[in-house]
Amino acid sequence: MGVLHMTAIHELSATALLRAYAEKSLSPVEVTQHVLERIAKVDPKLNAFCVVDPDAALRDARASETRWMAGAPAGLVDGVPTTIKDVVLTKGWPTLKGSRLSSAAGPWDEDSPATARLREHGAVLLGKTTTPEFGWKAIGDSPLTGITRNPWSLDHTSGGSSAGAAAGLAAGLGALAVGSDGGGSIRIPASFCGVAGIKPTLGRVPYYPPSAMSTLGHCGPMARSVDDVALMLTVLSGADPREAYALPPAGDFRDGIDGGVAGLRIALSMNLGYAKVDPEIAALVQAAAQRMQALGAAVEEADPGFESPHDAFDVLWKSGAANAVSQLPQDKLDLLDPGLAWAAREGARFSATDYVRADFVRTHLGIQMAQFHQRYDLLLTPTVGIPALPVGMDLADPVTERGWIDWAPFSYPFNMTRQPAATVPCGFTAAGLPVGLQIVGPLYAEALVLRAAKAVELPLAMPALN
Image (tube, rainbow, N blue to C red):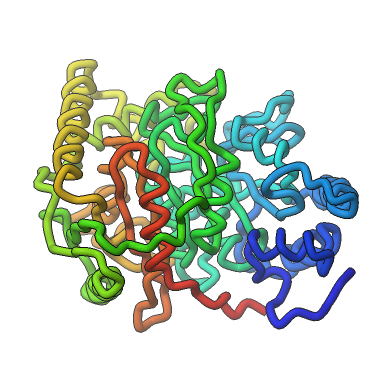
């Protein structure tokens, strides 16, 4: 079935692959073999995968090919090569969460809701992607799997905690990826690696087992195009009895995605009123906002008006780190990432009153944003205020920063408020590192966020990895 394509197979979007399967110009087996060869060639440079299972992937692909030949695909992503972040349960593969303290013994006999939905829709699961230990930080390294590198510059981090998910997508090691996001873990690496992703409203994508970070933790889709993000969100969303906050089905997120932004009231906040932003990033975000205005949106600079929730998030996040560490063998904590161990010690010092006060700040923040969205349909910000950090650096400014939340102030407020927030590429720095635009919408407004993201996205050519 193979045919010569102007675009290499690994560069094709999920949407393009599905079209080719329907036309019988490509087969799922041909595509899967190509992507597995690409992984074998490129991943030693990136370290995006902690598990690759060629036998399982080809078995999935052969079953998919049979269905397509019969004109009866199983679902919306039948035959599409897909990856799963290694904090998300996948039957038959260990979920070690980037930690040397996780037991590989299993039994690994259950899929998370996201994995189960992908299987039901016929996805070809390639393997599991790397994460910092228990997803605790926004840098792409862990004690278990080492450093995950940025495909645009191997001397820079992929970002985290969906580190391998973003790096793999950018390098063509699969068309779709499941990520998770407790403070920016989908959006930060997507921005650093030049791909798209969305942290949906809490409960839109059921998440089980629950995150150690409680309701800060979200699960969501990542891809190289907004169309593919919308396709994948359609597959992943819907109720599941294992998710206490699951939302009811919301239909197909591709419907109306080409509707544009004309008539929308959009706020542009370059710093949320308190954050630092690299001048190159500020210029690229401003240019994206101007493109939206040229497309008919009413864009004006306006900050949401809340004070920095840094200290409240710090309590919630580090309490979650303490919770994660408390469930580990206490006689082996010297094997932890030292940064995670520090965060857990800090979190263990907080009182129940500290936690409730932080949660009250979170509630008030949600109210402020709900009021803000009475005036504005959407909020634009930089996704991250800095380009990807060099490998080996956890802080952009060690003099003034103590942790990753100090250099990534734009993402975690919207974990606190539970709102949908997407990132799309909006250009490159002079050094050739991708930059992301964050688009935030009211609760439950994923369709609107994705519509705006589609209107303004700048699809990037694939990095030159040979």
